[in-house]
Amino acid sequence: MQSLSRTNTVDKGIKICSQGQMKALGTPGNNQTPKLYTLLHSPDNDDQSPQTSLDSKQDSKCFCRSHAERCQRNYLKSPKPTQNQRVEAPQYSKWGIGSTQSLAEHLLHEEPCACAERCLAASDDEWFSERFSDDVHPLLSLNNSKLSESIFKWWQTLQSTKSKANYTEVIQKLFSVVPGKDQYRDADSSRCRTCAVVGNSGNLLGSFYGPLIDNHDFVMRMNKAPVEGFEKDVGNKTTHRIMYPESAMHLDNDTHLVLLPFKLLDIQWMASALSDGSIKRTRFKVIDKLQANKDKAMVMHPAFIYYVRSTWLHLRRSYPSTGFLVLMFALHICDEVSVFGFGANRKGTWHHYFENMPKKFKRTGQHPGGLEHQIILELQKRNLIDLYTGW
Image (cartoon, rainbow, N blue to C red; front, side, top):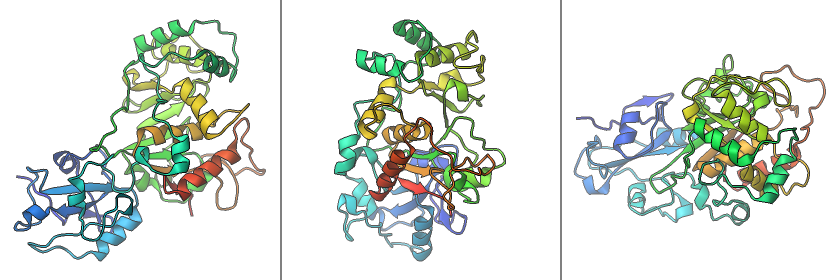
């Protein structure tokens, strides 16, 4: 019979839950080492050893956290429990848990998600609530593919093409190639989905964020940003790659392709690139036959792009950057979001970590970079995301 052992440690005493333990405890797990956790011996079993049997979910709980340094400090300061000794939970003021209430006791009550740090969709922050909407799902499906006339006209102005294709026919073709089901509509009190949004900023260089990034359930990267050769700073795990036809790259079989469609032709390209390869040009020559798992392919909803542009950024002409759209995507499908590789480096230079340092300041082109950065800082200030900006 398996049992939880308090002696399983890695990296200077940081506690880790194995995949099997996570599943046995009814907590989300994956093939990577999950997040740092707090192990709690149930008050109902005070007469038992802390090496509690995994056969009973009530015996113990395994709880993941996103802050490596804080969890490490708390673990190193806490004494090893002896038999019949109860480990007290940390304080979680958001849920009004006082010093007399343990995390195990808290878990007996229904909560919006299973995360100890935060539950984004259940945030009571007024500023966030004014902007965040569950009604606009970020991904296209057969059930939600209909577009209003106003949003369709706006979407068609982003990158005009000569395509005269019928939208309904394009959608039907798309979902004959990739899954058309609703995805990531699974938020409930048992889910704690942690996500890392990894941008391309040069502030990642020398950060050694790699292991921290890889410890998230989802790791989202964008466009052609490389991993090989930068693993110590950017990690080597990728669960989602967000891109558009002109920035596409081949993917392994385990990575989700998330298309950012800035025009109807982009959706046509995706259906083609994952089937017959008939489309070879959009704005310019693109990959005609894409190596990717079509069963893991998704398309960001044009209405979601419009929602981010109108509700979060209040834009008139320009449209959100890829990085900001990916962050918004994460906020809508994850419970905890950590952001890496956004903004300038410590010298104030904006550049990509995989490119040579520019001699001149790089502007953000069609994207409202300054406004987006302000919103990201506001999200951090309100403890809605964790923002990592290098050293």
